[in-house]
Length: 171
Image (cartoon, rainbow, N blue to C red):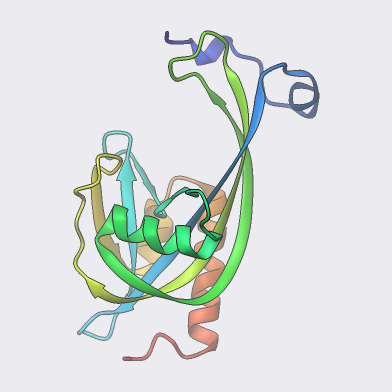
């Protein structure tokens, strides 16, 4: 069943309070970065929805996983990169309509925990069925390409932390 999203109500505080089918989802992801051999700081982004949405790699927690374990696993699954934690960054939250194979649209409150992750191995690989493309971006190009403002704010926070701590120097 497919819903015409234009016929769904705007997501307002009233809708959030009164919609009869709601759920909360918890995910985790990462700002995976490296200093390239040229000395340039780079961030890995994935593209979804036919390559039209550039975003940070993230995904749902599996049973028994911590948010950090989820972030590291999802980054590797979606990008092919192995990473190590530098620091927790921020939790973003947003609401959206889930209409996929549903008779009645479900209103979802999504919370995503993001971590700063240093790349320690692997190679970019978009073999995940959920990902259309994966690429390295300079910080400026990443911010220009990214679709979601909440994730852009997380990248800006990560960049400030990287630069403050001198993590943008060759490691």
